[in-house]
Length: 93
Image 1 (cartoon, rainbow, N blue to C red):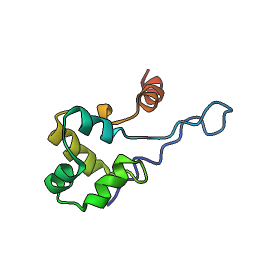
Image 2 (cartoon, rainbow, N blue to C red):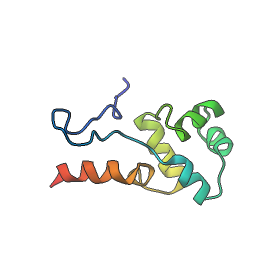
Image 3 (cartoon, rainbow, N blue to C red):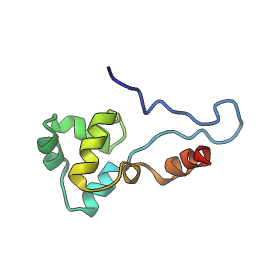
Image 4 (cartoon, one colour):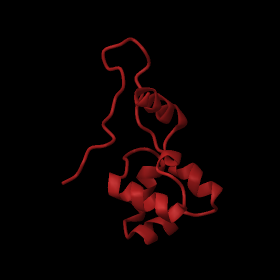
């Protein structure tokens, strides 16, 4: 079963800015001097798939996110755009 974790929109009925999910995978890869090719090989996925994740054309599923965070030794939160994390954090209070 695939969980659509990334289809979250906050405040859909308000006039405030709609917050969409964005991952910052490319930034993390650059900071760690890793390539998308390295990541695709480590995950066993097509390089085009990782390229789409890096450009936010598509997003990895929750299992891939967990694997990516372990491979890059970062939290899953660190893979997301800061605005998205801040907007989700508001609901945890």
